[in-house]
Image 1 (tube, helix red, strand yellow):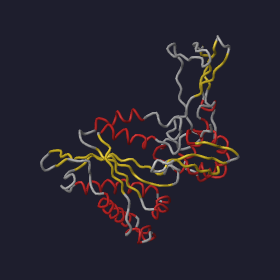
Image 2: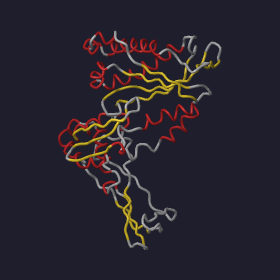
Image 3: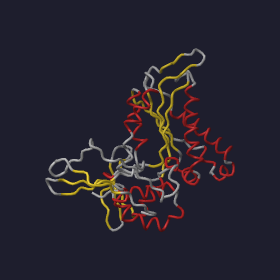
Image 4: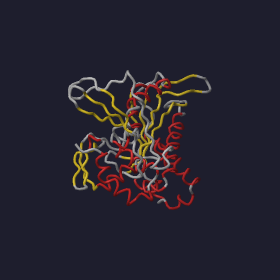
Length: 338
């Protein structure tokens, strides 16, 4: 089966030569790392099986968060870290999205729009939560920004995990909700729309004048659904945090510069779409946010860590299962492009 790394190794150099001068450092780093992952470029170790008289080369992973092979290793650790923040209440999953009309502006002003999307969404939830008909207090909120749909098209939205209960400062008590209902989604959408409109008008007045006025009159969409206990909520949210734009198992065909991949719609139905490699790579890279790669200022500054093999390290032969002998370390190769 084809993999993302294969596509990057085959078509990444041409893409880099064409767009490299305008690429973000994080995009260059991802293009390099994913193409080099588990190859001699990353370095590794050499082992020898005395039974099969065969050598085995074990190359290091790139550890890039956007790599399908390396980016999903921290899910369990994150869940354990967040667990101490949980409350003994029901939790709800709130998804806040922008209308289609605003996505063009969001793509050109990502730092502004992403920040406002998260902040205005959280503020809207907090405002409506103060109503005693719903929570009557300050809820706990965990927010995660995602910028793509399952078909990798640009679609900025935020997932919020919201506690079904809130802190009441007047009485110094915590008030839980009594049913599987958090708050009305239509009312929340109206508050979010108003807060987002006011924030854009205040922080970017020139940009505000370019936005069609009717966007502030149409209905915005917010989805709210119960997700059970806190542990269940974290497990529900974790894939959205550590998920990369596309996994290798969804890439079904790659030939003659064309990539076919599968995606699942919101109703669970599977579809397939085919893109040329250049468009496919562009869609993948546009989902990588600079804030996750602050240390990667230049693509040539690729650093690979490796540990020295000790007596406790055992490599088994994939053919016969015998313990293999460590021969030597393979140092990483410095490269400037995929």
